[in-house]
Image (cartoon, rainbow, N blue to C red; front, side, top):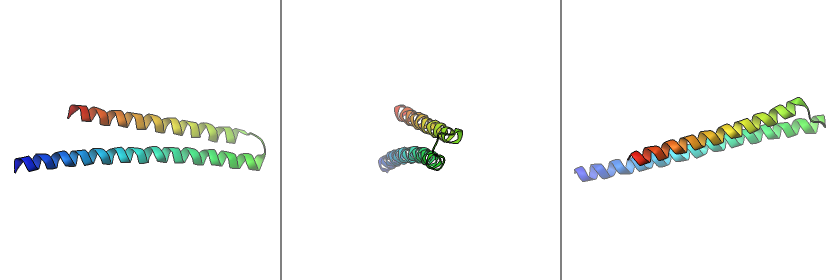
Length: 88
């Protein structure tokens, strides 16, 4: 009976780790989606104004910052997950 409990605990731990990884991927994709929307808004403003304005530059810079934050966040969570796995 104890062997089955240990196996079940290991399976649950493995599944929890996989769920966490998938959630991390979804979060990264939401950062990418947000950055792409900001770039799209910048292009829309460019089409309307026909010149590069401070609004367009601001949207582009914010898009880059959002993407960098998403990359850093994803890397940190992946390192955290790997650290937990090494302790097991």
